[in-house]
Image (tube, rainbow, N blue to C red; front, side):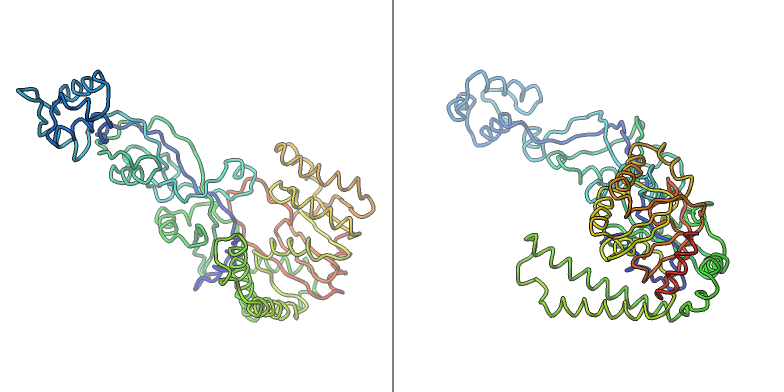
Length: 479
């Protein structure tokens, strides 16, 4: 599921409202740990064959012919076994009790090792790498992922490392099943490296102002992560959420819409019922599509493909739920609708698109976005983009940021009549509209964020569905 689909699925939390969500980066430390262990491994094959032959009653003189090896190799193996006291010389070569134990359990040897483990900055425990969706540091720095703070922010020390937990993590690592170990002690942490794993974070607030953060990992809520984050005071960390009072934010957005539109806004309770119906229907369509894709990829058999009637019913239910939501001239918007509306605009627009934004972020204005915009321009769709007048300063953030601006500039040169990019002083409220029939107005830039995300922000937005109101609003913001 996409992050906005996940937000739709888990938006309901009893007693709380969803303030914001983001694809997020949970902090990890990759540690190189110097440790002392007792490592148990199986015997080398030749030494094991020699010992087993002796157990079966063969004499030392018979080994060369029985094993088909050169005499020097067999005698070298016997010498090594004698040195380890696995065999003893007398009238005949005999296997010792120590040798029998080595055959049964392997060979134990002390070892000083440098072990590489991952340490979770929220649960404060070692974690295995299997199943983790690791994220690049650059994605955090560019604002593609919200950075979740470590709680507490301090680096782990030796006292944070539990030997049984490290043992368990190491036993799950690929390539370590051929050897077992008893970890005796950790000497020191030789190296720290910050890495991240990708999750979806949902931030909620209760009517009393309590903040709660949920973490969705691989499409499923991770209750342990949520609980540990709360226990370590993550939810009350200063700066986790930038928010004014709910009434203050929404009243300001209403004022930006204008009195005529503000009077037509759908009642909040009625809106929640209709929006929930859309969420359920949209999630049903997404589930049906995943089943189709699994069959197309060969992961499921053909008899698991949804029947045409099931597909048709799911699509019809979603269409009806969305129609009910759009009947009102204006309604509140959900935070996850920003991504949904952008996708819809790029696929549904037939005559025009109008977008306002703070800047251009490379994880949004990427190759796919530029390609979709190019196809619209080729079909004669009129595209108007309003950029905050300070946006060009964002080029200095790096090559990827500059490429986002350059990609748009190249399209503007190729389609000068169809693509208009203009400056604006507006830096509080932004909009996304297509074909003058629907407009999303919110306090969230449509093609950017503010760079590196270390705080969540309370979302406020409204959707206008009446063409006359949409046209009047676009005329006003254009002035």
